Image 1 (cartoon, rainbow, N blue to C red):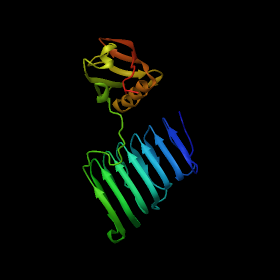
Image 2: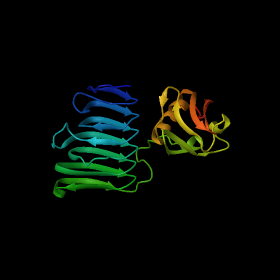
Image 3: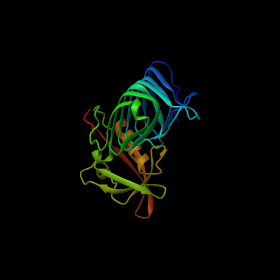
Image 4: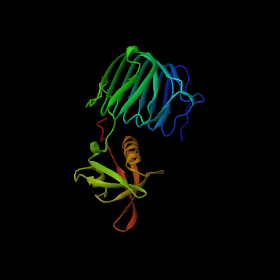
Amino acid sequence: MDTPSASSGGVIVARDRFATERTNVVFGSTMLFTNCDLELGNLDGALAVIDGDITRWAYRESEAALMMWDATVIVRGSVLSEPALSGERVAVSIGGNFGARTTGDLKDVAVFAGGTAKISGKKENITAIIKSNVKENPFGVRFFETDELGVRAEDADGGARLVRVDATSVLAAHGLKTGDVVFRIDETRVPNAKEFRRELRRAAVNGNGVFWVRGDGARQTRVVHFGNVFGR
């Protein structure tokens, strides 16, 4: 499990967990890329790309407003809390829903959400563009979806059930089929469809993976060789 700490400057890549001593404060020309849900704190001169949800967006345990300057935040999922924001020159792209309130100045802010987007609070102190139901990421960032490999999954008891496996997909070519429940890929447990998407992508990038499945009344393994599925 990766647990990097933020520092001023540089690139941080977090696979399963991101934690710092200051509630995930990212500052000083730092680029943060995470393959996990996370709690996020202040941002100053930072880019954060999050392949998951922001489960909590707050400054430590206090009610103090988050402070953000010259920051860009790109999230595949949603913001699951309602942060209090204060700052300037901030751009936020959310695949799901976004809600925030302002207790201070919030200037030159742009929020684009695939679901709903709202900022409440002192309207006189807000200079912002707020857009809901945005279908495409305005920054050109594209997160991996399982449809790209001809497969779709849903949550199942202790795994991810394949509800669609195209006949032409690389998974079908290696023996996986609709109805199989994937509960592990390589050495990583797959408890649900969200983790299946992440581990499928990782296996595809690595070029191969061992899929542990329940199907036809038995547990089986399937070794999948992905080849050049991403055209690299």
